[in-house]
Image (tube, rainbow, N blue to C red; front, top):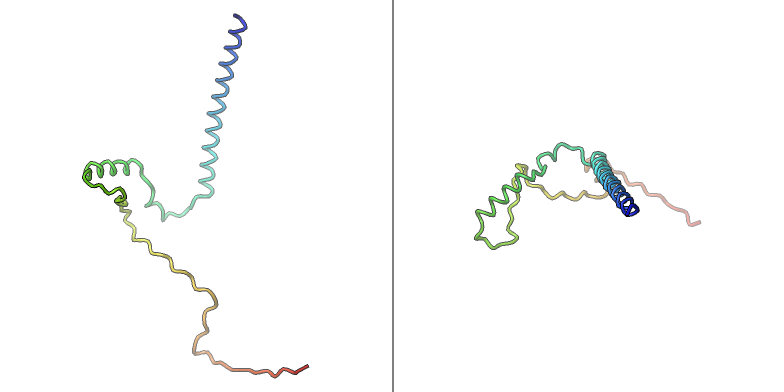
Length: 116
């Protein structure tokens, strides 16, 4: 019986130690993710209007569900208004050198090559 009690106590201590290590691993993984986010995230302030507010979005979805129970369109979700102008499709940059101005004087130079 004494052996069984010591083994049970040992199992409990090992489980407690394992739980502590799992909590520490989770904490360190979260710190690493935050450090990576801080290091590699965009630093521009122009994206602050597009910050996602989960509570506000959830309340808007609840209100929309109550108001539109009779609509059977599954893909008819309205996007939230951010107050920003519509995004324009970026134009592709033209490749190559810009043409020289038409007013520049041009002079044609011809060279005769020997038949050597």
